[in-house]
Image (cartoon, rainbow over all chains, first blue to last red; front, side, top):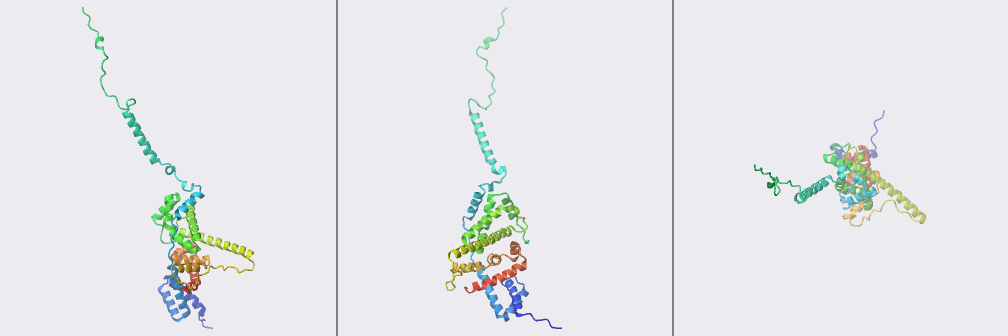
Amino acid sequence: MTDEAPPEPESEHDRIGALMSDVVDGSATAEVAAEVDAHVATCATCREELTELRAARAALKGLAPAAAPADLGTTVEATINRRSAGRFFGRKTLGDRVPFGIILVVALVALMVIVGLLWSSTTGSLRPEPKTHPRPPPGARDAIPRPIAP
Amino acid sequence: MLDAPMSTRERQLVRRLRERDEGAFRELVSEHRDRIYNLTLRMLGNKAEAEDVAQEVFITVFKTIESFREEAKFSTWLYRVAVNHCKNRIKYLARRHERDRDELDETNEGSATAASDPPLPRPDRALEGAQLDRILQAAIATLDDDHRVLVVLRDVEDLSIEEICEITGLPDGTVKSRLHRARLALRKKITRHL
């Protein structure tokens, strides 16, 4: 019967190395972080590796965010319209395509103008006739038959 | 799936995008353009290519919004589209580079060929701002696309491992081990310039 073979130094480095990314990320548990710390305290190779990984990550995180060109949106929109011959944004309901609201307002204004014109017109006035008693035609009194003298 | 569900605002935006609302499209681009452009730039290392791919990302999102099943956050889906576009463009550029190199070899038989990796700037120059940016960018460009995407998403974009798993479709362990290998590959290239 043989004792369990001790882990080879290479395997231990690999195992600790795999944990280093979590430590560098800040996502390692306290136990893992302590294990890595304990190993690097005695292993110069892993200590150097951890230092370099930290430096590399810090440098990458420090990369200045690049701003997109200001006209990116309009360029994309123009490309979509060009490729779809202007039909891409056209899948809209009838209500979206036809400005019913504007048409209604214009129609109401036009109707009010027409009614106003007719109201004030002397020929085709919509104004109701004033209620007056019709005057008897001239000479109408004469037309009343007089009693015949006996 | 991520714990954080889609917000009401995101749902409304998606609904309006499905109705092909131009206003929603402008909102989408305005809100995400810098992050998407930053991702494409870091993945591709070239402004013109990055801008072109960023445009294609938004066009794809708008065209394929019907296929978004709302199982993940909208931004996660957007990143997934962007990552796929970047990977396709990297492959396309690599093929074109190889073809150009072959053509160059045919015309200049016997001459030395260019190295496939982009040259890193000289370390003896002052590492200020833009130059450090170029060094990091060149170092990222030496990674293969599977490793590059993880470094960009985690170390540059600062997304969580969980989000990266959602975007790439890789399990947690694979993301972590690949990320570690990618960082190991990067560290020598970067730290000698720091």
